[in-house]
Length: 314
Ligand SMILES: [Fe+2]
Ligand SMILES: [Fe+2]
Image (cartoon, rainbow, N blue to C red):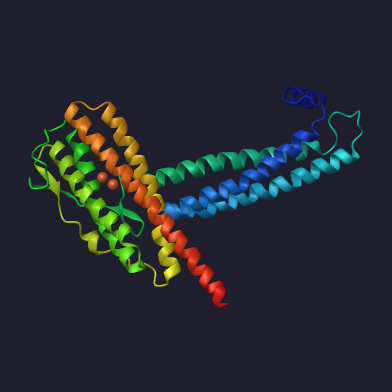
């Protein structure tokens, strides 16, 4: 028992370990909602299938951590009130420390893992705004053709990377075309509809630059997913929420990250010409990220206005 008092004294100026148990319990309780939030973010962004099982699993473990935090604090408080002040390791303290510590460690590990996993899923190996069908990013296959390559661009070293980038940019054209139609369906202002169309044209340019850098002999094949997309939900609130979510995650976050990647690539590009291409793409992607943010904000404002109208009518 004296041993536990000594190790605790290293961590705290207070020789009584009671505070340690309480703090561990509190940390466990505070971290549990973080885990739950990470699981929910992941749930919004993960595609489909078995991966979705991780979301309820994370939520369940967060709940267990939450339940462990409460008895840790109760046990510590009870121990403290019943303890002999001269006894540096009162009875029951080991249980409180174990429960509180377990709750904290489990919550922390899951919060970190859940957040990393969610970020990995948000990226999903795509560059820029992906074209999602059933939550999965869809691309055309590569085809032997020359008409998509910008002839002014000299072939770069990593042809395979540029083909992958070109296919991702090509899919983004369809993603912005879809956004423009969704905005029209929701009654969005003309400024947002125009920006969605302009972004699609930017992506045509990015695709052509990328296929040019890939060597000029490869382009995109058919993209049947462009016309095989699930329609927006029938009720307005769900439709606004769906467009807000996609614009925040795939637009604001993903295109913002793409802008950062292009900016870093510009700094280390193999030729000045490629550096200029990366820099131009970075500016465009930053504008697309701002569009994602503004569309999400407009959808959120519409949702609030819809809710307010519902409250007035009630
Ligand atoms: Fe792009
Ligand atoms: Fe983009």
